Length: 399
Image (cartoon, rainbow, N blue to C red; front, side, top):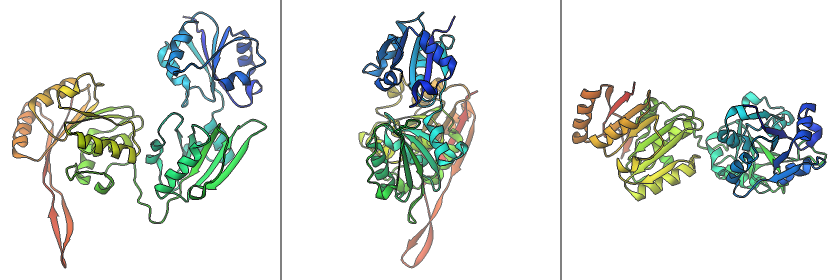
């Protein structure tokens, strides 16, 4: 199949910033798709134009209706870096498309800040929740963030300050590559700048002295989760996640998710990972959703329902955690849905559940262990070891 769909990255410098080959392509184009700004940047071209529709999802069928013609879709910067090009590529087969990358906003900001790109986390809150930056708030971490408009830097400054990162240095660049390019600088806690709507934000994360650092590695303090007292405790959670093995893009089913601590740490640990939590108690589902937002994984999907019925029609899991309500029916359905090389971990505390776990272990194999944790506690003038409830853990991989 001959390619007919051309996804072209363009900068604020418009046609002058494009290669001769791309300029020739635009002159031959029979139709150009883009935003109002993209069309303005290429206004000297005499060509049929289509503006982004609302809702945006209508764009795919609209592009497809021109199949066979020379079609150009204009996007900002690199079409495959937090761009509409990513969604468009999923709708068409790769033989139909050619991509023409341009210098991205990330590269432009890194060059202006003199930051090596290998040392930066590159994020987007354009059309995404601001909370997605929370897992990346680490001492001395450098962030470059694509924003949604003129108010986004102020909103991020408030978030940083609320998270005890108010001393962080914020630099906003607008209209990069244009004669009207501007720079705005201030610390988050003092941010009062008014900036243009088209901007990109650089952040050097600097914590306050009393800031509680929340690493992306598993084992966050129990205290950072809102809970009703029933949750997978820190030490057990760390072991559990080591056996679930969070990986890029992997899907976790968290059955009996409680306050969501395992799912939330799963999503914080691996880029683009997905977690689906199921719990029969609505109050615990609500706690999970609150914790997900507070800890920077607002995409955590929580279902109030009874397993295994609530598990039907979900995305196939790469890992499954059963932290409550183990039954033979739940296990058998979960196991049938688990992908090859998938991991399943079950934690139980009652004798009845231990008996079922041992029965399943004898049939399927895997590894079984008992986790006994003791924490120091002060009683009056004395310091003692206080044991937590022992947890029996079964882990197995599907081959």
